[in-house]
Image 1 (cartoon, rainbow, N blue to C red):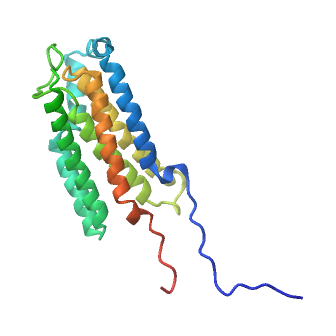
Image 2: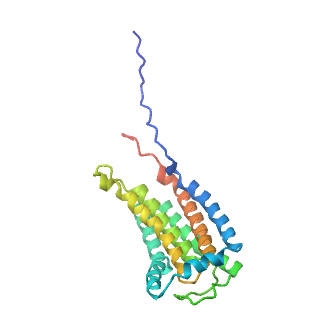
Length: 231
């Protein structure tokens, strides 16, 4: 009898899933957000703004100011600096540079669009201080960029496969909580009367675009296969 033998082992295929390439989904979602921004700006901004802003009172405004603060540069700039420093310290230079590049690009794009569009803020009493033009919301853009990047990084880097079921679900739970923060921050900006809904959606589109770009720039280092034994 003849037996067919193989002299070398074939490397095992790395399984893939729809979540393996989130930047594709993010770029598609960015287009949806842009379309939604245009739709709202065509005459639906006012009614939606009044529906959200109209239920805000002194008590709820205090809560929304706290949530809004999570999207401020005072909070997010040190967070980005720490993320980049940790990645560089772990010899992950490309991801560290990518997250810093995305943060700078997001902030500059927001300022450029504010200057180009020069949109006035809603003419209502504001529940918090705000300066400059309204479109797009810097809080919404920066919060989405940072917290979504953190969410994706946490979910892809934490491995708890040897723990119990509750511990295995922890990365997913934390990543979802981080991903929900930009939604709360954006909503708070309308509640506080300093942005139109389309300002927030447009800000989300900016943050999402640069988050996808930053995630794509450091994709090679993130997806590199583990070294073979004996190499």
